[in-house]
Amino acid sequence: MREILTGIINAMRLLFSLDKEVYEVIILSLYVSLTSTLLSGLVAVPCGIIIGTKQFPFKKPLVRFIYTMMSLPPVIVGLIVYLFISRRGPLGHLGLIFTPTAMIIAQFLLVTPIITGILYNGAKEKGEEIKRVAKTLGANPSQTLILLIKELRFSIFTGLVSGFGRAISEVGAVMIVGGNIKGHTRVMTTTIAMLRNMGEYENAIAIGIVLLLISFVVNSFLYHLQQDS
Amino acid sequence: MDLRIKALKKHYESKSVLDINQLHISKGTFLGIIGPNGAGKSTLVKILSNVEDATSGEILYNGGGFSNELSKDMTLVFQKPYLLRTTVYNNIAYPLQLRKLDQAEIDNRVISMMKTMEIMELKDQKAWTLSGGEAQKVALARALIFRPSLLILDEFTANIDPSSMVLLENTIKQFHEGYRPTIIMVTHNIQQAKRLCSHVAFMINGKIVEYGEMNEVIFNSQNTDTQKFISGEILI
Image (cartoon, rainbow over all chains, first blue to last red; front, side, top):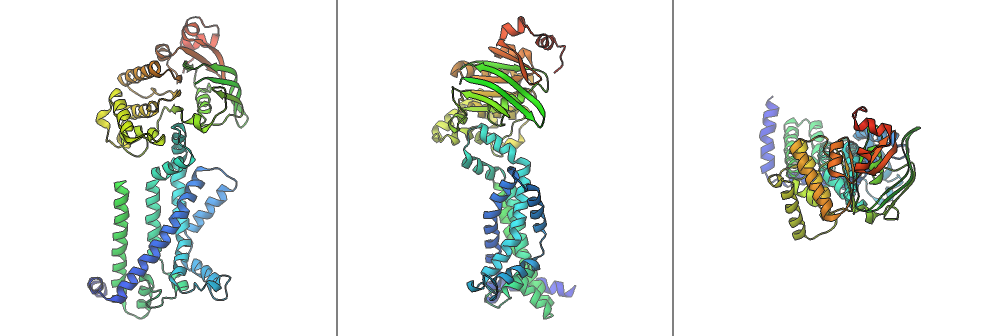
């Protein structure tokens, strides 16, 4: 209990300490998670809408695959990405291993199925009706797509919030492909894991609270956007 | 809009739900499609409005096939309308925005339409907070706002109160008198068809068993099924 209380006090101290290292970790966490979520959104939103509103062969197995990928263990994603981008891997020549880009790739693979699955469900429920209204009011295919995105904005926000939540709280994959290198690939979750290994529980809790606070602020912002729309 | 239907068929798996050999609906006709449940009325109007595909057959719109340009000149109002998740104003303005009218023209038309439909007080209300009758008024306003040459109504007054029904019927009547579009209205209500339609088609088991001018079919029907339906022996 004492460690938790001290952790809360330390969290406040950390936030207002203006310590460069702490802010670097926070900024890198936000950069990696927001970038991977936005890139996933760009791919997953149209994919989810198309899968939810179109009929095509092998749709059912594809949906089952997406659902399975939604609960993909991060360490497996980390391992696969590592094998591809490590020096001896097929993409080793790109020099991505232990870089923020590698972490973004790993989180992108984790988040994309989540947003796709959520969009698929939203589009399956309302998509046909929206398309029908667009068609009967004279919308062309691109106007119909814009209307689908507008009408499914709640699913899009839900997908993005869930995806961001997964990305910012993920540790296994970024640890493997990022390596937790100080000042380069160290993010909040890998810092917490490292501090725990070092027995510095109070600081680990402090960073955990900072992580929660930041997650709360970002989600509040997204929620605000959702309400306004 | 002038419509010609030739050998139109629709099957759901092996079941035939629509089988119309020939039908001509000339420009400016106000056609009522009447018939019992499962007669194929809604399937016919969905195919006419290109929401659903026919299994076989041909429909000629002004002598030609369906095109993107044509789709901008026709619309279908459903019994249970889907309103966009925005305000009433934006719902009604949407078809005009699709047609890229300037904002002043959009404002003029939308406000005038809302006054006609007696829904001015709902202007800024979110569509999902409306009652069934209010939603149907908004859906009809959204359909009439761009003055389509072909207006298709699928039991559009089935779930609304009598006073709203009178208002909607009068609005459609005025629209027909003002712009002379072709209107096709699916209804179970013979009295409503009598009040509004110039022509009537009676459907049963996917086929049109009688078609002609309203008074001719209602008062001088040659078909026993039509006679039974009119006298209430066939329940809707």
